[in-house]
Length: 308
Length: 255
Image (tube, rainbow over all chains, first blue to last red; front, side, top):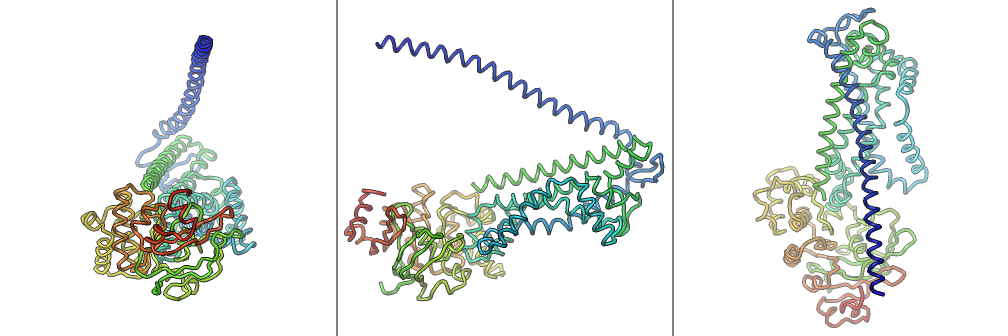
């Protein structure tokens, strides 16, 4: 009886060992496949970025960066005014989008919950708002462009201008800012809110003295993401900012961002080298922005770890 | 027991339709430590939160009966003003992500105090009262979250004291602390009871025996509605309980 049991266990062990060997081979196969896919992805990225940087690098010189484009079929001149226009547009867009987006997120996270309890109407407004943010985030930028063209450029008669482009751009980045701010506020532990309220702070004091500072890194991440978005979009600004390569002197002037200039150079001129140079500058800017996001969000997670 | 600081009369609390507390009448004496004990889910923490209206923050809560502080209906007092008078210490230490100094100065600051000398004075006095001053006086700029768990909890007590409350509510203040840190908190509670009315929820009956002057035993049956079974001097309740359920609980027959 006991002998039987012992040999049975030995059999089971042998079967387990065989199966383990098979599973280990299978695992190795899959892992190497994953490695392969991963390497291909990295290779593609390096090829694209590398090609643009190497090809574009040849066109880049101090002259190229510091002189204004001169227009024409051969794409004479540099990119100075388009760099300036890019910065103007980024600044103006964020000036509009940040207060709106952060305010909306604060309302949705900190206030909407309790207010929706008291009224059915408010509850439905809030669920529509949430759905709208969700949907807006997935709409192609040219749709915002068409909307901006119809409303700001023609109806409100702002024309092709920094103002029209910034307002349309704000619509474009609003969902991003709302989303990241919501995430940041959700990550702030309720213990902080309760602790503050229990000390006799009002809800507003709790919000601006405790909750917003604790969520700040996340909110900043959202703003930086939006900067990247404004820098890299073309379609939406093509129909709202126009294409003048001159330096805008007021918010009612049109202009060209770097990305837009790149588009014009590639489509309307023979200056492919300069298009590449512009592309290289753009890529470097985007890489810098991503590094900045990385830095900020690492700070954010460090803060979260401390809470526990 | 005539000098009651806090009082409830036929007080009931509902989460939506579910009744969490039923007809609780109690008089909590001034400048004494009152412990609320009872099995999990008997509503003692909910009852504690009634005194600073923290239950107001929970959706769907409504109450019946009255809760009085110094004879005044707390639902007629602005919750912000009430909470400046009735401080609270939570189960999990929850210092703000700010410096030790700013944690303690937070309460006075939100009530409008800006004078830095006055703030320094309050911070020192509060940290001394919370028996934390000697450990942190050279590091007031250090983040409160860098302190140990027990120190964090004493920081939270100092933070509550800085607002000059007359009542301090404590919701299992030592539940997440090691035995030595727990002992320090218990000593502190004992010292504070000279000047403050303290109500403490605890799961630990030895703790209730050690720190409190009065003990209230809460109990719940299958309905999960909490009720007050017995309230008397701690010594009496532990040595000579009137109710069978109290006796069963304190002798460890359930809970």
